[in-house]
Length: 139
Image (cartoon, rainbow, N blue to C red; front, side, top):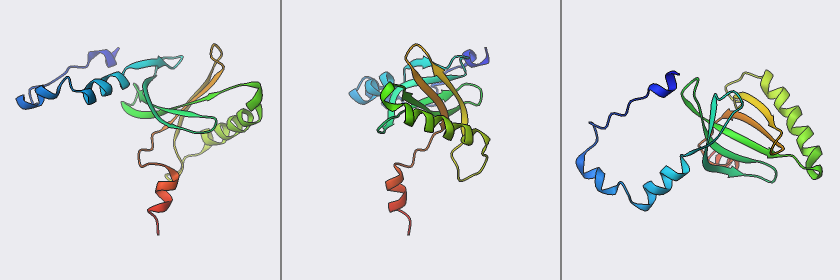
């Protein structure tokens, strides 16, 4: 597809940047940006970079191949112990799908991975820290 036709242009890089190519940071960055999972229809690619973790959800950096933007890949593990949380999450996703407002996180897609019993959903990526950080910076 069109996504596969990307070309790398490294003519703009300065020569002295190459000496840092194999340092620990770049190795870790490359490892974290490896695609480790794709959505059922292949539109979204999850990287092995955990952005955050809550009591029942993990959020990873991901890529939307249709729009070319980074997104958040949210994973909720479904177990008999968290059925109430899962039900509430599904209700919230149903509402979120219907909303379109600049102050509400944008929702893209959701699906159930039956093999891993994981509810996955894709949202806009928020990179400004935690809600606690956000509140702390407001008057």
